[in-house]
Length: 135
Image (cartoon, rainbow, N blue to C red; front, top):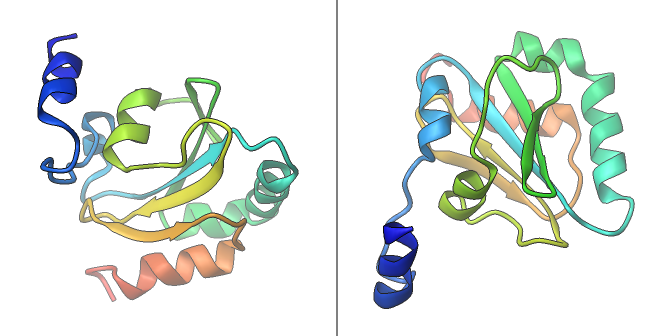
């Protein structure tokens, strides 16, 4: 509450990008793909199908996938982690409600990729790989 009041007073332009607290658990371990799936068109469905078909590749490439829709965050492959959907949307400057978007956060906690259109698992893995400290 206090943070949102300060946010109103101070404005959003001066604030630097921070990794959402609920994504800190993945730093140094996994890449995290966040899919903002509130669009009222077929992009969320297309993205979901592309990711489900490539499940093994995403797991092998250490990419955890979460869908944020309707104020909730849902793990695509397993439901072990909890994310704060509002915090993730705000901190990553994700797509606003009613919009589609995806953001890939690398193991180092930095944003590696942003898109307003569905992307293949190969494109997502390539973006994670290009910036990976292991390659």
